[in-house]
Length: 112
Ligand code: 5GP
Ligand code: ZN
Image 1 (cartoon, protein in one colour):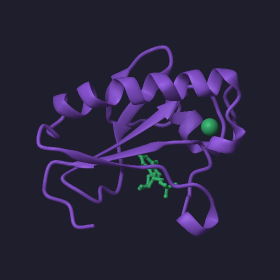
Image 2 (cartoon, rainbow, N blue to C red; image 1 turned 135 degrees about the vertical axis):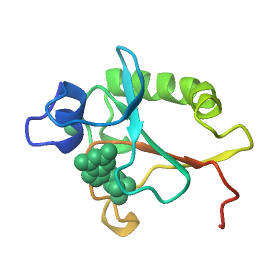
Image 3 (cartoon, rainbow, N blue to C red; image 1 turned 180 degrees about the horizontal axis):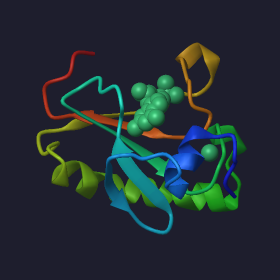
Image 4 (cartoon, protein in one colour; image 1 turned 90 degrees about the vertical axis):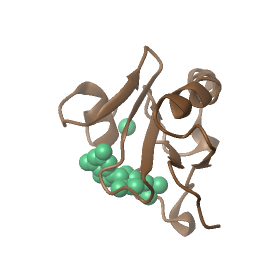
């Protein structure tokens, strides 16, 4: 279920524009508005939950689907030579959008 106060739910619904690179019934992938690497994509499940600890059965199935799809999406978007996945969880990680998302960072060598 979507959440009317959530930025990424609004992007999923098309109420806020985004640069989409992939979409299916379970997930949306779009470009981060403030990229931290040459390629910086955000992969989001089409159901609203903030944290891995809050994923129900549907959310867990969407996460499995997202991680299955990411290699091809990354390869199709300039990450043939490798990429990094980041999933910030909560305040100490600096999570700013409380809709679970996987950062896909690549297109260049990355510092650790
Ligand atoms: P977090 O810090 O929660 O892990 O990541 C949230 C990400 O969402 C940040 O990298 C930020 O740049 C991105 N972001 C915030 N607002 C928007 C927006 O309106 N559109 C897009 N495409 N990305 C956004
Ligand atoms: Zn949401």
